[in-house]
Image (cartoon, rainbow, N blue to C red; front, top):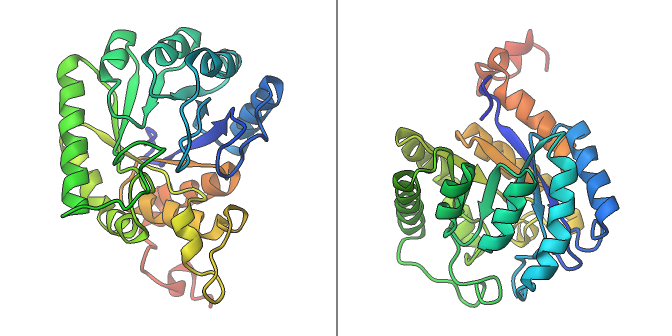
Length: 282
């Protein structure tokens, strides 16, 4: 969250040919850099550069190829915006930090030592399994309790190792059914509160994910990624209003506008107040 209390917006920049929503669109280095700069103009506080897709069923990318994709983009954007790197590989994370990244977005929840050594922030995400296997019948006894416990344990371990900026992410869509995702969102305020009580912040990423396509689609259909903007915005606003400090999104401009409204101190008192709080207009 910003110093003014406004939630932060992290723009997704996939330098990949196979990401589920924008795969291939920004695969070329020059195009990716241009998109990163455009996100800054749209209101992104952080640009998250990733060179390996983590969509369900995705296969790992060779380390050398991931470095080729990521490092030039990080280096070009680091002077104009805060850059995070979305990777699970220690060498890629280290190279990205050397190129100017100041935040590690770690879906494996294992790179806290790299963050400590590099003196950068770290995002620990929860994932059941790996991208290749995570959606093969994910199961929990208590998804909310298990995810929250995992994240807070990892955050404490990172803090003990010397990481001073720690974010926790419940990993919506990473080894979860639609019902698991909804349960985690329903209780995200509790995660935010408990994390904040120990000096940690919370990030949520729901943008364009498949579970959103199951809600609100006509008939028994499932809306494709291109038709999930409304659900993405709704869940981002819910998360921000629940105390989440940063949301990770593809649609930066729309979400940044929502973040300004959620975070505007002059308007917070209007939540739940109804139309008359705006002078009685209906």
